[in-house]
Image (cartoon, rainbow over the protein chains, first blue to last red):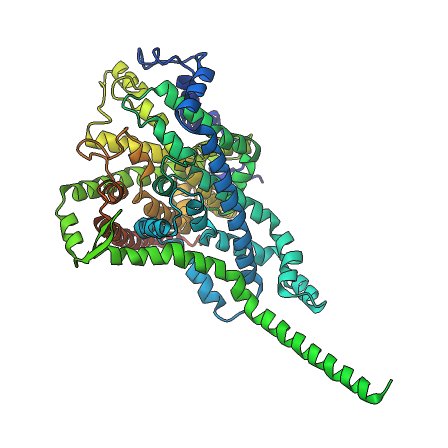
Amino acid sequence: MSATIGGHDRRPGFWVYGVLLAVMLGSAFPIWWSFLIGSQDAAAINQNGMIWIPGGNFLANAARVIDTIPFWSALGNSIIVSSAVSLSVVMFSTLAGYAFAKLKFRGREGLLIFVIATMAVPTQLGVVPLFIVMAKLGWTGSLWAVIAPGMVTAFGVFWMTQYLRDALPDELIEAVRMDGASMIRSFWHIGLPAARPAAAMLALFTFIGTWTNFFWPFIVLGPGNPTLPVALQQLQAAFYVDYSLVLAGVVLSIIPLILVFVFLGKQLVAGIMQGAVKG
Amino acid sequence: MTTAAAAGVNARSIRRIALSHKLSRWDVRFSPYLYISPFFVVFALVGLFPLLYTAWVSVHDWNLIGGQGDFVGLENFSTVLAQPYFWTSLRNTFSIFLLSSIPQVLVAISIAAVLDFNLRGKTFWRMGVLLPYVVAPVAVALIFNDLFGDKYGLINSLLTDVGLGPVRWHVDVLPSHIAIATMVNFRWTGYNALIFLAAMQAVPRDYYEAALIDGASRFRTFRSITVPLLRPIIIFVIITSTIGGLQIFDEARMFDQAGQGGANRQWQTLTLYIYELGWNQRNFGRASAVAWLLFLIIIVIAILNFVITRRIAGASERRLRQKGIS
């Protein structure tokens, strides 16, 4: 008997696809809108709220964006910061996750619980002292000020611990240890390769989280050496807001992550469903 | 080869073996601590220390440029608590938080329920709901600022067409909160829907069969089986969205050019207020006082949340048990 309960195993009716289509439109429309307005002539858009056809001015608007804000250096900064943070989070989280999942040491359970508990600490509220420290170090305005605080996360450690617990058989580690491999060698040759799928996922989410982050980079970098969101913010800072300019900037700024989404969206969905949380 | 020389070699190699044994024991013993230490160092330096040091700063006169001044006790707290803007920000924070978290969780569960059907093109639909997640909050805010434009915005044009008249999104309190909450919801609803979907797919299908035999409706099975079994994940999503929702900054900051939360601080949140005190007024002491107050509020709300959701979900789980399902 094939179960039909709640429609779970039966092909659903049209209304279900109708609802999904509406949700999908809600997801995509604002992004489409940014291109619609970003491609208009500045004078045209204030005539009427209803514009449904893209204009021919996108490249001209994009060129104005690049003249108005330091777009290329902001893009470069975002790439540097997001890559550095992702790399570092993956390295340190995998190392710690390997220790928590596979090595025996006193205080292991207690320390792991501590790590998990720190996820609930609103560290954003420590901005004032963090800024004071960065100022003392002379790091304000430098990318280090954004990279250093993000170098390893509680979530990353937790994620890698969970994964390695099941993915890596203890016998394998014991076997290499019997052969006389040091701890770090057994991590390098056994732990790291086993961690690869989860590490890739962690890198992806960390990259997106860092790329879209605004609050701390805005405070510590300022307009002099911005990441993309910080630079984007300056487009609206003028007295008169020209939305064809602003939204052309939005389009330019979201292209990189839209590309990531096109190629790796499937992995993102899988990652969230495996238990990723907000990065 | 003489016996004496052989004995010397032996003694040396014995020492060497002993040393390598010792090193290997240290390796086994201390490596785990070494591997986990980066997290604890980073957390101590950029998490715990700043949070605690905030308390120290909050009881001093402290200028962004001038640095530490006199010890002033709780003066910063009493000054801040006497500011009307503090209370406005507190109200705004709660209002925006409620407008974003409650609809977000409800809609996310509904979307998850729809995605839980045996769909054609599963991956396509799942990716579709996740799309907004890759758009940075600043970009989301800029797009919605245009859509919510008071004069020429698309939403007001549509509202005028159906006779509801233009809403002053950037002037009136509640409309501005709705607009900002919409930005937050746009980005996170699909993400949370996928978390709920994963939990729903873990529900054993025979529970549904048992309910069908008992003659339960589709909505009934959803309410009485799916939702109670989703309890841990619902608590998890609510707690994370509470911690995030009470610290909303990006969307409120971007809602107009000035970034101070409106002429009368209609949509200034507490984090925006912290920024204004610390970096516009350069008063780190007062900014820290507000940060600590917000910290306490978040802890209280998180505990309340936990207790309430446990109780509500616990009650429906008990009903479930009485029916002998789980």
